[in-house]
Amino acid sequence: MSRSAHPAGPRHADVLTEGHYSAPPSDLNALDPKVWAHTVTRTDDGVVSVGGVEVTTLAEEFGTPAYFLDESDFRARARAWRTAFGHDADVFYAGKAFLSRAVVRWLYEEGLNLDVCSGGELVTALSAGMPADRIAFHGNNKSAEEITAAVRAGVGRIVLDSFQEIVRVAHIAQSLGTRQRVQLRVTVGVEAHTHEFIATAHEDQKFGIALADGQAAEAVRRALSLDGLELVGIHSHIGSQIFDMAGFEVAARRVVALLAAVRDEHGVELPEIDLGGGLGIAYTSDDDPREPHEIAKALSEIVSRECEAAKLRTPRISVEPGRAIVGPTAFTLYEVGTIKPLEGLRTYVSVDGGMSDNIRTALYDAEYSVALVSRTSDAEPMLVRVVGKHCESGDIVVKDAFLPSDLAPGDLLAVPATGAYCRSMASNYNHALRPPVVAVNDGEARVIVRRETEDDLLRLDVG
Ligand SMILES: *Cc1c(COP(=O)(O)O)cnc(C)c1O
Image (cartoon, rainbow, N blue to C red):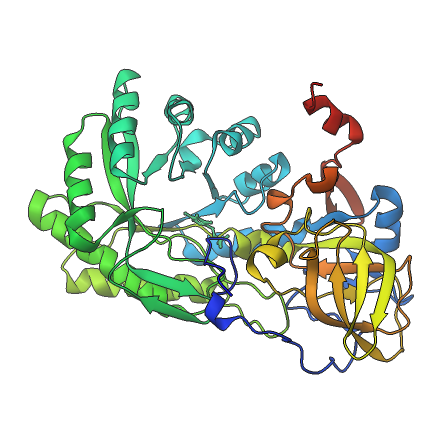
């Protein structure tokens, strides 16, 4: 298998497991709280509900496929991160995981900051009222228009990703008569994946400037020399769906070493260090994610220890969780269309969505769970592969799972933990209409991103 690691990817190719589920779970009707949003529960009549609303009602009102997002869970997770990191640190929600104006308002109200990585994400954030100084702008190839828009808006920081960008941002800021606060993204030579990390000397990837060979030190030199820039810190993001904190430890140590070198060379102590995002969530019952307070404690201890050793003032820490906040808060609801049993192999269950609403399985061999949610069943478990309706045999939603063997067309299935990198990566493949995102809270359901219509499709096609 030659799939490569990706910022939004769950697993390294080396640790992919084929036929992950060896035995069916003891109770197919049970909902593991680890993988479901906080308010998800099975009611007495056997129907699953979220935020006090049953999925059968939701399907009737909003149709399928659709994403249902537990608003109170989202707010609780955002708050947990904010509280865990306290006032000496900043939490930037990574908008690329899932961004909508409702989400921006929740983040604002819960005291979080926001990462964007395109002009489109910036416009969404600003239009929902996120103050520009709480926004950070990322990306390895920001256009001049995007940089100009960000500087004009007054974003709190732009994260510089390359030597060209140092000059580009400085030039734009200066021509707009301002000084832009920036961080420098470095690659620290750590490749972090789900359960392991690899420390390497060399970073073979498109993002950031390597610490190796004095590249980052040279970038700092240039950034400090330009009037249009105010260099406030160093940024590092080491991977995604990470459970092992050891990778962050190596990254922090290497970033602090750079801060010390900068102090020695320039007499400047850069006041900020950003350790990125990438914290893992539970997609299946096998995953054991860390709580925000454990992560906050581990990161601040690492940074304080390293700074003490280097005799540096401890910089202000920031982190950028995306998946860890929104991922667990939503599930995708599908209706079963066709069922194809293959004797001795598995049963293919086709649902009314697929790779257009969840590309992660096809793209990264991501693992998901699935449950029958419109009723309970006492039937024997059967090994299934949940597939979509697209013209592509790789159109798999859940590769291996068990569902009751009396499953029938019309049943509703839910795939949990689809809050991150599903709607945000959704496509119109086969001219699919991208599903809505519905926020559910306290017995009320409200569309926050509406379903695409055939008119939407035709509007873009100017004929
Ligand atoms: C993708 C990304 C994140 C968020 O990653 P998650 O896995 O969603 O936590 C944070 N920072 C940067 C720079 C990223 O590219």
